[in-house]
Image (tube, rainbow, N blue to C red; front, side, top):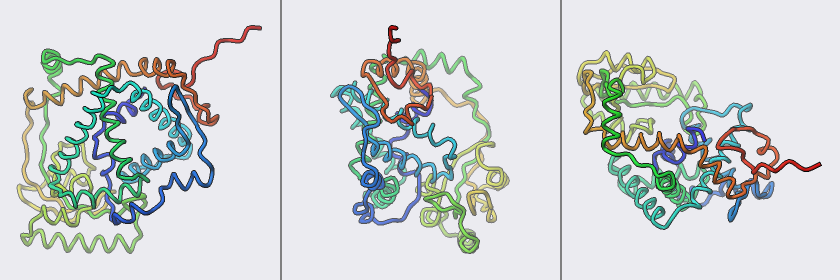
Length: 369
């Protein structure tokens, strides 16, 4: 089992869907036919994998593929054609692993999963200072792009949270305060925090927010003009955070007023250079990067320091748990596959060799001659 599969289970419960910007109405999200349903009508819905008590159909894989591709497109990423078979098999293996682990879930695991989702859901709204209506406005376009209903989205997130508790219980994962302290003391360099800046920005993207494709020259020119106008307004004293919330097309920061805290080497060079060269409360010129046009305001510069254990203890505990899960995951998933007699029925997907968690189908004994 690779890091990608682990991330499927441990990724942020909300941001996986809300990591993009969109503007479609709720009614469109609710009334448009899901892409996977259209594919099912055209080509049927064959069972492509099965195990004891469950089966996965082509529509299940298509829905997952649409969701993953949409999130990748929102980050300007595409799947190369030559990698598509391996990509589809990877997603199928993720779905199989999810089924196997959910099959191990107790009622207590499920209750904890629901509680974890509810907390993550509320934290996302609180951090972004979003009302329920604002959250719905942000969520609905993404449901439409990813071909999910609200109920499917919530179930997916609850399932992912539940799986985390299943893994901790089944693999007997336990991290003590002494383990945390030992790791902290033995890895001092990992907790050295370099010089950082806290800066906010307004991004006007030069890429289509759904497909990741470059905008036309005309649209870029219009975005550049808007950036110049916003720069004048910001320098004239308008609230920068309010301008970011209204105009920025960076889904990762706009709800926080465009704010990021980062060291050197984390952002693209043009953005980093501008941010680190500013004085406190100074606003940059329009900065052009591969993502579009940025207006940056520096809030403060933070000197290098060592992060105190108390401030990162909870995060470190989760990290150590994930590390231990990752070590045990391949053998555990292989064991579950064998117990469940997992079979991949789609010949094309079956032929892809991923090496994830042992063979995808049970090995047959050699025939006697």
